[in-house]
Figure 1 (cartoon, rainbow, N blue to C red):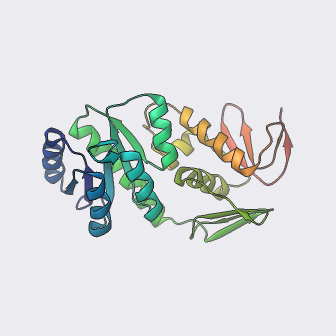
Figure 2: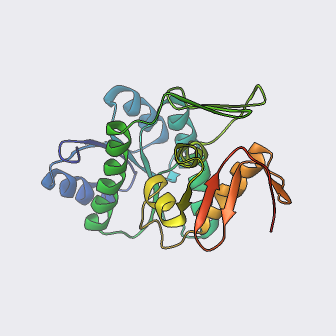
Figure 3: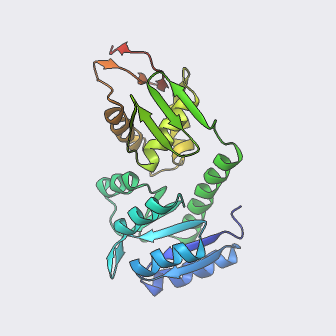
Length: 236
C-alpha cells in the first residue's frame, strides 16, 4: 500500500519539509505538511493520514505531547524525527508508541525506506489478523479492542507493549526469537540494537506482575528469545 499513501509531515523547517515532500511525491506518496503541534492534530483528524513523520521540536509545543494525543485517538503509524540522538530519547519515543525513530540530518531515501518498512508491517498485521480474543489462565487478551485483563483488572499498556504481548501470546507455548520480535513488533533495522526489546519486556513483565525469581508469563530462553505461558517457572 506504500504508493498513494498519505504522509503527514509535522516539521516547521521549510529546508527540511520542502525537499522531503518533493521526494515523497516522486515516489508516489501524498504528503501533507503541518508546521505546528496544533495544526498537526487538526490535520491528523481531517486528513486521516496513513503515517505521520513527527518532529519533536515544534514552535508551539513538544512533539511528544502530539504523539501522546495522536496515539490516544488512533493507531496511525508514527515515525519520530529529532535532532536528539541519545538512547534515552529513543526509549521515550518507543514508550509513547512511536513505530520508528530517525535522527536529523537524514536522507530522503533513508526516510522513505523507513516509511515503507513501517507501512509494510502495518499492512501485514491487517491482512493476517490474530484471533479476536485469547484467554490463558488469569490473563485475557482482546486483539480486536486491544484490551488486556489480568485477574479481572484491566492493564494499561502502551501500543508497543500490547504489540509485544500480542506477538508472544499468539505463539504461546513456543519460543519466539529476539529477531522475530524485533522484525514483527518494530523493524529488523531498528537503530541496530535489540536493547529496546529488553526494556519493553521488562516493562511488560512488571505490568503482568512477573516475579524475577518465579516467572508467571514471559519466560526467557537464554540466547534465543522468549516463551509465553501461564505456568510458573523458577528462575534458573
